[in-house]
Length: 360
Ligand code: NAD
Ligand code: GLY
Image (cartoon, rainbow, N blue to C red):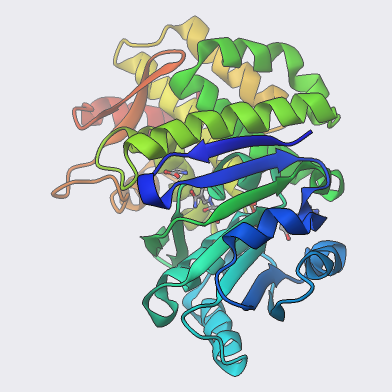
């Protein structure tokens, strides 16, 4: 069964298709491909698994592909430039379409290349990790890392379609599955306490890859994300809520060196730290914090930040967060479970206490 959701952005609205086996369904791609030239962007891990299937689905197009090295540490300006080398070598024109086949790293890099190549060309997301299917393939945030800050260089550029083949999750390493669950927990925490309770009671099914359970969380996560993106595409307001836990998480990723902690692992700890801070300012109870910590741990995620990241270093890293306005830090915190807010009014002593405590 295929579920179709819509990201309602007027003339730039696009579908999210979710279902098993969609990768090879030629008819899903055709309406969203511009021109006859298609460049598939993928990586060295995903290519042997899924590139042939995608090539077959795209038979009839003038196809080229670029296979990038695998890993967050390659989400760099230098590696990103290889996409332009390939596009120019294949003489792709303005009327070409890029297809991102892979996880969030490939999706962010291919999307950013599509935003920039000849000042903007079409692209389609074919996410193959849980994290990419529930989050990164939707919403048009694209970009690369800088040594001093995560995702610091990028653009908003919406895909023409998202084609999420849930069958690809069968080959995903368990650690990556858990990483994707961090973003799923985020949606429950910011928007849907009922969903959060469902996650508490169905975590075992998710970890054993029950197909119905996975399909449900992908759909519910994409529904929430599509709603938020449609209301605030460029993050002038509520879209920032999608960054719950990310101020801490991005600091961990940058501080530890990209690729050492997975994005989802860093976000898992970040959710715990945001909960801790929310309790310190009197919004969450200790019971709520304990619940969040247990849920994060039950997903197979760490709940403690790396011991070698000092509170001082954490503070330096947090200072370059993209949500800062006029140099003033803004944090996403929880008023209740299922209800998040962005606030610029965090008492520095509370933030320091959270950083010193290290975890919730
Ligand atoms: P990833 O892209 O590195 O993929 C994780 C690993 O799984 C990689 O080794 C990849 O090669 C492998 N893989 C992918 N699909 C597979 C499959 N089906 N079977 C086996 N292996 C497979 O990591 P990710 O967690 O997908 O994405 C993390 C990235 O997404 C980060 O860079 C993060 O900043 C970004 N992100 C972006 C957004 C956004 O809105 N743009 C949102 C969240 C995260
Ligand atoms: N993952 C954050 C966003 O898309 O806004």
